[in-house]
Image 1 (cartoon, rainbow, N blue to C red):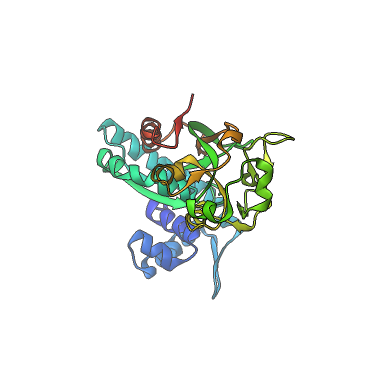
Image 2 (cartoon, rainbow, N blue to C red):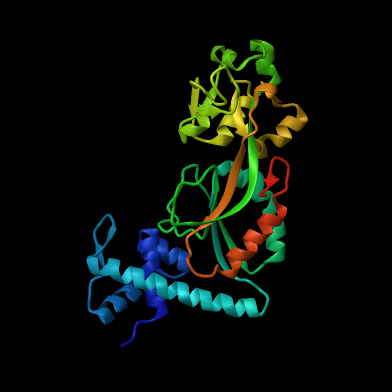
Length: 302
């Protein structure tokens, strides 16, 4: 008896979601229905794919081998469906996008309405992480990463650049004074990042070079939290222009040490793991971004 795509999909969703009940919710089925599908699959294959304990599900060795093949088959079916949609000039399917929370909030979210109007059959899944994720592990189609990329097997498409500059609120500067030289930062409250550590090197000229390594008074994991602390007058920060363009335009944040600022353009790239031709839904989103990312705080890629 041959296995079905429904049974294969049930197995993959259980693995990805971590439980039968979560998979059932995603598939809009009952937990008992998903459990029966798994049972039929194991019976047809004559192997145990998952060990069920009271706390979790664990892949057997046979399950790990079958999972790789099942993903390939389901991806192939999805691509075949997309190709038919392309012939109708209607890219379709789920598009999973991941990027850092500030970029998602300040850049991607304002563009989503226009994209959905253009491509109503694409189902978007937007995820934010302040740490770099494994695209395969998180089942992500496309990630947007800020900063220089390490050597990787991922494909990358440059999108744009953004500058970083040192900022503070007028209230903070009224209380503590405005530094006139980079070296004077040592006497101020500096808000830095827990990671990546490279963000604690500010692009400022000084007697010994063009990078000033700060000793943060506050360590923060999220760029948006750094921005809110600056707006609240808690200290000086160094943030990307795409996060702070509106704040600078309104005067809520002002640049500090502008004459010492080094013009460093922070690269922003789209990365993806597929080695074959890109799915149409990914291609149209990349093309859409490339056209729209001339917004304030961003400069197009050369």
